[in-house]
Each structure stands twice: as C-alpha cells, then as structure tokens.
Length: 507
Image: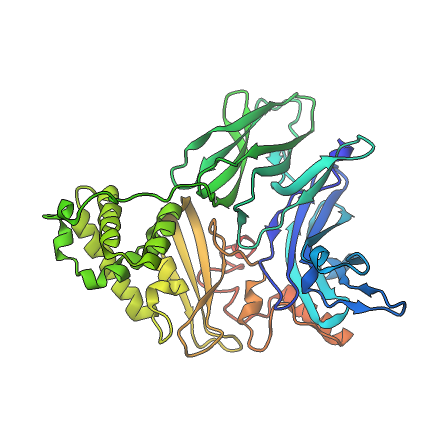
C-alpha cells in the first residue's frame, strides 16, 4: 500500500488566518508502520496575498518559508526547513489560485510537541507560529486514521497509486455553487491479534443529515475487509450535485462480523446548493388564514425583529429564508413564516414556546448586548440561544496578564443544526476591553470555530503568529508556550484542569 501512504489524513485545521497572508495550516498522522509513524503538515496559501518582488535577475517571485520543529520532553527530535514559491512572473490570474504543499516527517511512535513557523519570503513582518501536541502511537487494535477531505485526486504517471490534493477548510468544509463531489481518503488499521474474536468485516461510508441524522439515499457504500490486511486504504467520493442545502456529516464506520461498530469518524460539512428552491411558508395563504391564532397578539411593527430573533435556533434552510425575507421586508410573508416556524416545531404548545424563547432573547439582549450590537447577535448570545444555558461558566474578567475571557462548558449539547454532543466547551475573549463584545475564539463543538492555539489569543499585545526576531527570545517563547504561560487560570481552572481532571489535551 506504499503508493497510497504518501499522503496522511488531515486532522485539525488551525483556524488562524493572517491579516494579509491568506494562509491555512493543517496536520495529519499516519500509523501503518509499527516502528515509524509519519507526521504530515499541509499548507495552502493564496498567491495574491503574498508580497511579490523582483529578484536580482528581474524575475517577479514570491512564496512562503516553513520551519517545522518537533520536541519530546523539551528536547528537539527533528527540524525541517523548506521554501514554497509561486511560478516566476506569474500573472494575476495565476496568483488568484490557492497553492498547496505537504511536508512529511518520520518519527518513532510517541507523543510530541510540534512548532511550525510560516513566513512570507518577501515580507518578514508576515510571520505566523502554530504550536500543537500530536499523538503518533496509533490505535492498539482496530481504528481509523482521521479523514482526509480532498480537493482532488488523480492517478500517478507511473500508475502506482494516486496524487492526493487535500482540501483545507476555514471554519468548516463548505461546498458551494460549483461543487459537484466530496472526495475523501482514510485508512483503517487492523492490529488485532490472532486470538482476538472481534475483527473488522467491512467499512461502511455514507452522508448523514446533521439535523435529522438520516442517511441520504444513494450516498452510501461499503468496502469488504480481508482479515490478512493490516492496513485498509479507503479512497472514494460522492456526487453531491443534487444534495440539498444544509449541514451534513461524512461518516465512516468499521463494522465487525457481529455487525457492531468498532470505530467511526464523522466529518462535518455544509452544502449550499444554488438550485434549491427557497422553502415556502404559507406564501399562498392570506392573513385571514392566521386569524384566531397567537399571531393576533403579535405586533406587526416588530415582526421583522421577531423573525430575525429566530436565526440562532433556525436550521440551515430556515436561516436562508430569514435572510431573504428580512431583506425583502414584506411583513405579510414575515408573519406567515413566523407562524409556520413555531407551529411546525410545537404544534400543541406554539404560543407558550414562543413566549419562553422571547424571554431568553430579552435575557441575552440585556446581558450580552452592547452599543453597536444587540445581545442575540453577539457570539455569547447566539450560543446561549442555540444551545441553551451552559452547565458551567468560568468567568475571568480580571485575570492577571490576560484579556477578560469566559469558558462555557456543556455536559449535553443539543442544536437544530447538528447532532447531539457531550462535554463541549466555548471560549470567548473580550480583546476590545470594556465593550462587552466577547468573541468566540475556540470551541470543540461540531460546526464551530476550532482553534488549538486559543490560549494565545488571551494575551494583551500578542497576536497569534507574532514573530520573535531575536533567537533567544524566540527560544524562550517556545519554552513558555510548551509550559502554558497563558494566564494562571487559562488552562488550569474549574473546567480545564490538567492536574485534577486531565482535560487539557482534549480541548
């Protein structure tokens, strides 16, 4: 299987984007060899966001420089430096593209701290650092790699395997107007011993609606597994041209002979299909059709605001309708939509459910509102309305050495836009200070912004990706990063406490 092992699975997207350099960084793990694991890092950058300059020969060129440092117990285990450049004298059309690069590093199976520095070759002020911990031990028996979502793949010229080009998301994977296929690659590792009674029998893969958890017809398949295969590659794709707009999961499951799920992977993505018809809510009904309902008590002067209040709890299609209807401003359509929204979800208790939700909206407007933004449109207000009241809140308004921040934790997370989840956190930071505008900088919930380096965003005067020109200061900062110098309560508190709860590696 060597021909398929040159690309590893995208594990986490950093979520950090330069103010000028349009950059995405991701990494993946490969576990097939028992004596060596592979760490691959992926980079995508837009050519037009680079500083393009003429060299001594008068040729216009530009690119990025990458330095990868791998540590174990504060000792350097490996380092690589590489430069990735755009074509010489590239025109504007060529520079409008995203350029990709993959860097591969073999390591003994273990847990490592990885530090990546990326800089614009022609602009040293555009330099960004990414730090993360990675476990390269792999599964003990049966387990998947993480799923590599591909931009494209094609057979190699020598016929030995495929060239796999990864797709690096921003907040999540998004398939818009021109998207026709979702391509993916993963590996299943079968490390079962001879005496093990449970062995994988097949890989099942399918598209699942994130709201209803229903499998989409015709978007499913399977691959049988031979017992002697220790590594089973999975390269496939689905045609999503006719997939309706909405949030979905790409799901891979390893199924045993007893039809039990031995391991699974879920990848969240959003489809926006321009061929969809906008949902129709009582568009052919007259206002008289609503006579005698609770709509008699709704103030028509407030109907536009009331409809907009629904955005945090609306599903994907409903949010599109809210946006279109509020832009159009037709109060008759807004009133029909508002009624159908509540009647379809709560047919027997419609009015009471609306009043209960309206009380929550007024609460978040009072608690999280600010001069420039109502509370329900703020990050904290949206999360509160969408997911409900958090189980725990760590409020650090006056923490020494950090901006004010809050950490919310949910034992159970329920939302109309994604599957039910357990033990999820949200981190909000007020970097503008005294504005009450706490912005969401990290969450491990599906579909939310994931940022492994969120503690750095708590530091006043330090932006993610700051460059340390002095080598001593750079080394010192890397030591502090590895020890966790992001405020005494940032990673050691009621919710995230590595000493007593062992949660630090999970957030």
